[in-house]
Length: 140
Image (cartoon, rainbow, N blue to C red):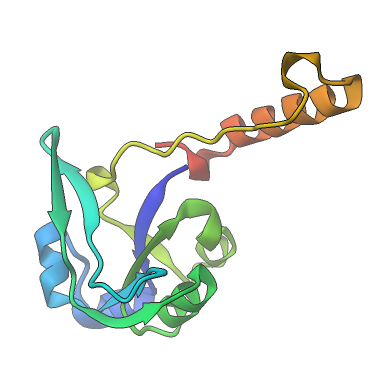
């Protein structure tokens, strides 16, 4: 699962498109966090991990609020790719800094039966895994 930084095209037209993670210091950030702490956004540059602490103008406790604020042109936000799939498809948001994304998070399908799952559970798992692997928005 990709973690992406995104903003509305109108916001980017007005404020500029960040070219490197350090450029985020000149942008309004919309943090998505369950804590009140200032956010840390990890990136990779030249094979090395780095962390940026953007200046959060808004700290939302749900991804939906962060995404809505980004769509409204309030700033850049960092969420999981699937959380902005409709907004990406409609052009309301665009991804920035894709070359600096950390490796995608693994997705696990966990169920009680383990390898001895009944056929319908196994069929669903196979279906879900195939769909997840085929979705380009989730890949790095």
